[in-house]
Length: 392
Ligand code: FAS
Ligand code: PHB
Image (cartoon, rainbow, N blue to C red):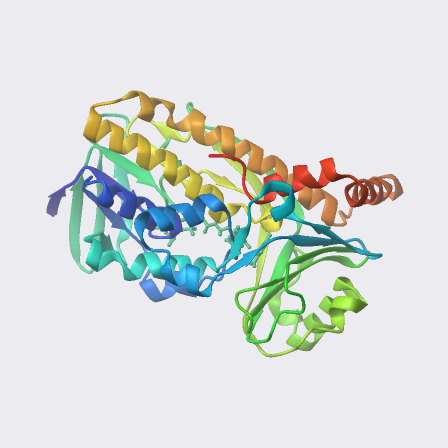
């Protein structure tokens, strides 16, 4: 067993784990990141596309924002399509802020590429990562690399290992509480090297279902439709999906859709999930390890960023200023923002999707709410300030 000592052991090298690792290294806090998969595998997962200010500002603070600034697309607004019209939410005019369209894959790549120069140790293909004694002040994490066993002795473990990782499961059942809402549909997404059909995102609620027109650049598009959970990707050849997108996005957008072969096509289930508390003794949880939102509000990646912002601040105060209070306050602080993002993501999902159990009254409520939004600056401001991200 090869033993190493550090101050913080981070589980997971997705955006949360890498952001946290870089922030701690930048402040002189020793850490190591343990990742189950290979770098290529992590980069192959196509996930989020819209960055809130908190994510942009963390990359700026780390000096890792140059490619995002060069290739990212600042957006001043987005659109809700109700089958009759496009309702534009002018986030810049209503909030004075923008969002940046820049894929999570690119954020992760930028963080990965900087690990050597920044001295961030990331162990890829670490298997059987297991947390021990997180109840005490001297937790340890064991893992195997090839046929060698390793142990990391540390003061804190931060679980950035996503929804299916081991960290959350290390919190005693008597301590943790779960909140879950599963949705009766998934999102079928397609990534294609074709120009976007619109210069801003369009979220559509059509009688046949939900659609989203998004993008990664001026030449790469990302689209989604909601599908029954029983559907398989194989049942959606490209042409069928392009036909369905053209119908659901409406004739104006459809006229501008450029079709092309899928670079990636997958179905993701939708759920709202929160695990509390987000800290148990020497274990902190960040990102999808602690919460999941339906991607409708573009919050998942950005919530991971705000968790990491709070966790990094608390850990630096602990190690550099012997301040235990910030660690003690981490969970409450992170959850306060998590719950507000959960609410927004749930409400926008409810507004923009057709639920199988809904009847004429529920549909009438969607129509009324969209009409109210179309004609109310107050309603649009509320949506806009949630979309750009509530204050951290
Ligand atoms: P991640 O899941 O990204 O990273 C966790 C890391 O931990 C992974 O690299 C994993 O390999 C590693 N890990 C897991 N178990 C481990 C173990 N035992 N040992 C070591 N490492 C382990 N959000 C949006 O805002 N918009 C979207 O459109 C969107 N689409 C999504 C589509 C899908 C299919 C999914 C699953 C999520 C989507 N999300 C979206 C949310 C997503 O972007 C997450 O919020 C984001 O990846 C959170 O980042 P992390 O918390 O770092 O978790
Ligand atoms: C994406 O581009 O992948 C994307 C954008 C906005 C969302 C969800 C996904 O709300």
